[in-house]
Image (tube, rainbow, N blue to C red; front, top):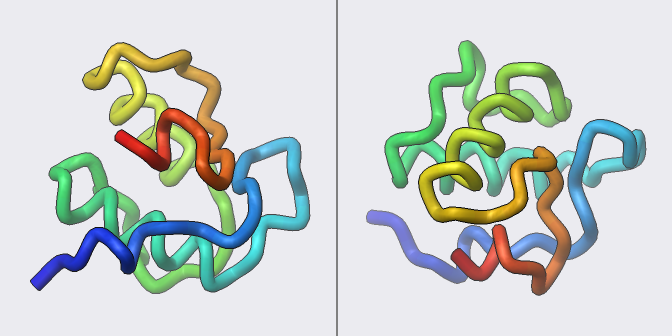
Length: 80
């Protein structure tokens, strides 16, 4: 069962960040799967890659958010 507290990240995650924390990437993949936005080939991967970027963009689009592929700790995408 999905617990929303499992989704909250400890630091910003995004493609140009380069230092995305592995445990945050795993949390994001899990949360995107729960919302139906996760179609990453390896949902346990700790790397921020093109598939997770595209899944985040789709999520942001569906929720009317800025489509930048970023998740900021406490930001609008995480909150949604």
